[in-house]
Image (cartoon, rainbow, N blue to C red; front, side, top):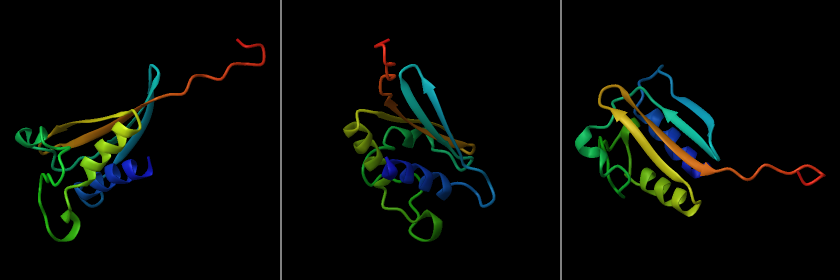
Length: 116
């Protein structure tokens, strides 16, 4: 989980302007926990969204500075979430930013001493 969160936070910070905010939320949806990481950066063009979780895919292939990337972070994130039995997804608007989310099943609530 630390690698997954590190990848999502790193990407959000990379594509957010200096001084802008990256937000992280956690919520319970039914029997799942959902963590969302939202940036207000460049967003992902619609034509590049279908390949976002492919290895070596880069929306903005910078080679220096803040945009330096191997294009592996989201691919690794997807693989790890699959191994954990969870899911990963996103929504994005070009020029306005992106929200990446992960979901995992919650453990059942513990029962009290009376078995209830």
